[in-house]
Image 1 (cartoon, rainbow, N blue to C red):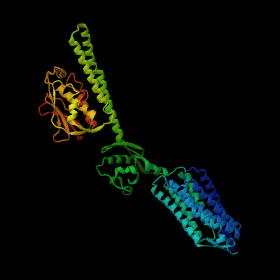
Image 2 (image 1 turned 180 degrees about the horizontal axis):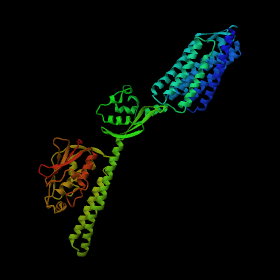
Image 3 (image 1 turned 45 degrees about the vertical axis):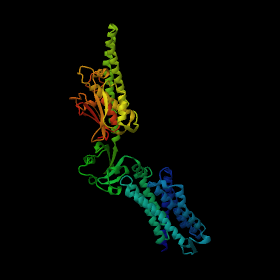
Image 4 (image 1 turned 90 degrees about the vertical axis):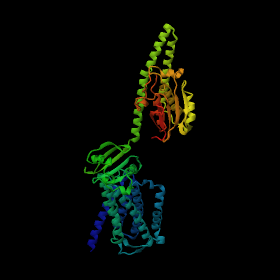
Length: 572
C-alpha cells in the first residue's frame, strides 16, 4: 500500500514538474506577444498556473504543517489571479475590449483582494478555513473549509463560466476562420475547470488543476502554430461587419445566409434573426433581378465581380470564396457596393461634357458666321460709305451678343443653388416683358398663380419664352429677318400668359404661325433653330431652368394656331 502511494506520489510530482515547465514556457511566449489583444491577461493566467504547479510541487517535496499552509495560501492567490485574468482575456478576445477598462479591472479585483487578505490573515480569524495538525494528514495539516471559502469558489466559477460562455458564443458565431481557434479555447478552458471540481470534491489529496493547465498550454500552443492564434484579431471581423456602409453577406455551401451586416438589411424586409439561416433563394421572388446574378456567382470558384441594375439602383457585386485550411470551399462572401450616386455623377459629367462640346461648336461655327458678316460689311462700308453696310455690321454684332449671352446663361445654370421663394406669374411676366425687344407685340396676362421659384432664373425663363414668341411669331415670309420685324414694328404678335386648366403649371403662347412641322423634341435642343438669325438656345435655356426647379416643359399649338410652351410644375 505504501509502495502504491509512493508510486502515485512520484507520478504526481512528475506531472507537476511537466506542468510547471509547460505553463512557464507558454506564459513567456504569450508575454512576448503582449501587444496582441488579450495577451497580457492570458500571460497572467499561465503565469499563475506555473506558480500553482510550483507551490503544489513544494508541498509534496517538503511536507509539513507550515509548508502546507503557505502553499495553500499561494495556490488560492493563483486562483483569484486566474479567474480575473481569464475573464479579461475572454472579453478582449471576443471583441469586447471596450469593457476592459481600469474601472472594470478595479471592480473585478475587489473580491479577490478582500479574499486574499482574509486568506493570509486566516490564522487570526479563521473565516476561510480551520486547520488541525494531524500527522496522518497530507503535510501534517487537516484543513476544513468555512462557508466564506465556498462563497468565493462559487464566485470564481461564475466568472469562469461567464468567460467560457463568451467564447462559446463567439465560436457559434464564427463560421469559418476563427471557429477552430474558439473551439480550442473552449477545450483549453474547460479542462482545468473540470480538474478543479474533481480536486475539491473527489481527489482532494492532489492538485489536478495545475496539471490540467499543461493540457491547456498544449492546446493553446497548437492554436498558435496552426491556427494563427494571437496573430489574427477576430474582433476585426466584427468591427468591419458592424461599421462599413457596404452590404456584406456570408453564405455557406448550402446557400444559407450565415451572417450579414446592418448595411445588408436594405435588401430584406425581415429582422437579422429571420434572415440569418434562411436560404438565399427563399428570400427573393423568382422574378427578382438579383437571382440570376447570384446563380452565376455561386458557380464561381475564384473571386468574381459583376455589375447590375436592381430596380432604381446600380450596384457592383463582389464574390469571394471562403475556404478552410485544407482548401475546402465552405461558403462565399458577397459585398454589394451601391454605385447609383457614382453613376448619376458620371451621367451628369457626360451631360456637361456634351454641353461643352455644343458650346465649342457655337464658338467655332455660329460665332464665326456673324464675324465674317461683320468683317465683310465693314470692308464694304469703308469702300462705299453706304449706311446699309454699317447696319449690317450692327446686326452681326447684335447676333454675337445674343449668342454669348445665351451661352453664358446655359453654362451658369448648374453653378449656383436656387434661391426659391413665392413669385406671382403675372408680376414676373410683366417685369420680364420690359427686358425683351418686343416692337409692336403685346402681352396679355390671362390669369395668375403664385409659384415657388428662383426669381432671377424664372425671369430668364419668361424672357426666353417671350423672345422666342416675338422673333418666331412674325408673319413675314421666311426670307425676311423676324428680328427686324420686332425692332422696326412692321409685324407684331400677341403673347398670352396663363395657367394650365387641369394641371399645376403655366403656359406662354402666341397668335403667330406656330411651330409648323418641326419635331417638338428638337425644339429644346441647344443650338437648334428654324430662324437664320436665331441662336437656337432660347428654348434650351427654358428647359434647363425648368429642370433645375424640378419642372418639365413641352411645345404644342395654341388655341389661335400659334406656338405654346407649357411648363408643368408638378414634375410630370
